[in-house]
Length: 161
Image (cartoon, rainbow, N blue to C red):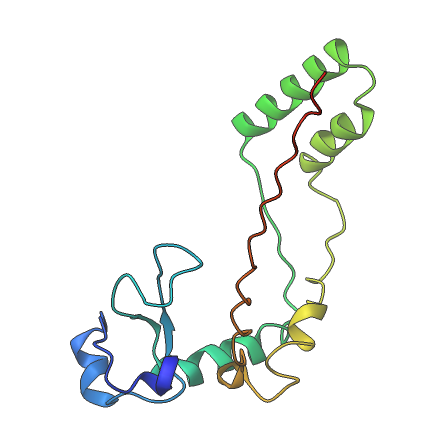
């Protein structure tokens, strides 16, 4: 945030119960809006979109995502199985090249199919749990503004005939 937010009016739409717990922190995340990319000033005060007080709960959630061996199982009622069977038959008649889709629809109705544990989310393991944490994201300084381009006008005259 420009100047670490000193002197800026902030639109902080934080619930009262959270506002009493935290008085603001350098790890708060704000949304800053400009009318155009070339503007040097904001078109509205920065809006607090992610307060620092949510950080422990969010990091705990990311760290617990892959700690499961649960099997997701589902059961379909008879009416839904009939609808899926009719859909598979119609697709097979109208679109014979869509055999994989038909096989998938029929596999949904199979009550004896093998279930596997949920796969591990690899991008989570490479994310906040593996690095310094979600709140330590550093965007860095913006690039310097481009130097003004000197306008050169060249007139071309047609030779007289």
